[in-house]
Image 1 (spheres, rainbow, N blue to C red):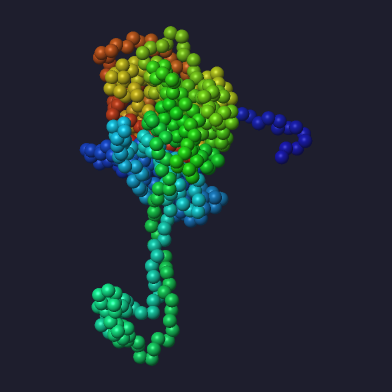
Image 2: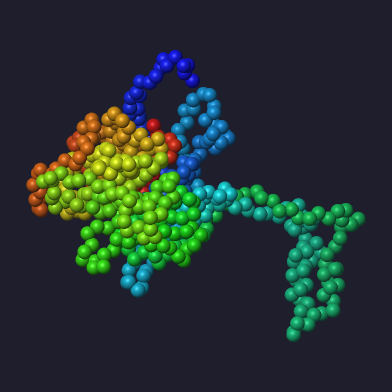
Length: 517
């Protein structure tokens, strides 16, 4: 505490944190040179739990794979105890394989003649209970609630008689079986000598049995058991694009193109429709829902994004059907910048709340935007992810790459944001006051191999498209801003930031890469 002399009235403002030095940590499922990737093995979802001790991935084959933190367990004690140690540890976050299970199977909707693939779209962790892990996973139509728990394998020990030693005509068990099978007559009758045969077969040891011991059940081994607790089905006519847990620990939402439903975790046969943007006439449809997310601390507040690049904040306390939003976040178009691709690249593919709920991070095709929920006039920061692709939009449209849906994530302290790009690259930006951090990393064992030069501070507004776009030909989108070859087939769509440490997990096809700083 300062004294009453009023000396140090105001401390000097702290500068932006220095850029992080990212290093390779681990890789799971690394491909060998020339190995062909199976479609079912491609990772389609990544999620850390709130503690950061567990990581879940889902793939296109409907499988969910769980990993657990291993470096803290090896050091012994809880993480809180380890943090109290007064010497620095050189250990970085390490994970190991825990278990996997088949979450979804391919299905067929006979009423609509529609094939439902098993691909996992989203995974969300739920609150743990009694040492068991709980999580939600969804494909295009069905959400499942899973419980993963260690079960102890029971074994019977300390018996009086050694079953391996034969007594009389055999051991006790075989004597009972043989006597019972040979002594029965037709119509349920029984021979008179059956009881005497059983007695004669069993020989007591000389001197009798000194003491009778009850068998003891021992637990020597444990196995992980995954069990589906609930199945939430038949509530969406369109493909589910997102699910999100509520901070109350009891409810969650699921969103498709036109509706958002509210569920109770314990009730699988009933949901409430809270947002419905379907018009009376489908020809009047101008935008669809692309993502929905609950506020991290306010259980009545949620946000959802649209294909027009807008984000709506709704309050469940206002009405049962939240058709009217409480706040609308949208960036106004620069005059004269509209083109054929403007609305396509403006579509928001992912939104995430910061840990404190003050900021929302959104990703469209070209940019990351950071929004303050108290300021709806425009984003507080805009980060250009791959601006060098803007002259190539025509080619990207023709090969459908322009419709790729990239995810985004924030660091636990809210100082940095990250998202993916092509050629298995991902970008990390500093979003603190005065920060000009902009790092490009490659999902490989040498993440700093390729660097993309970007402006020191990203501009606040999208630059206009001044170059005319021709429907045929044009430059080949094969080179990035730094002259490196660009591969549109290797795209890094999914990544997640550890909730409390500077550690990122990202998916490159069927491989899971992890980095730390």
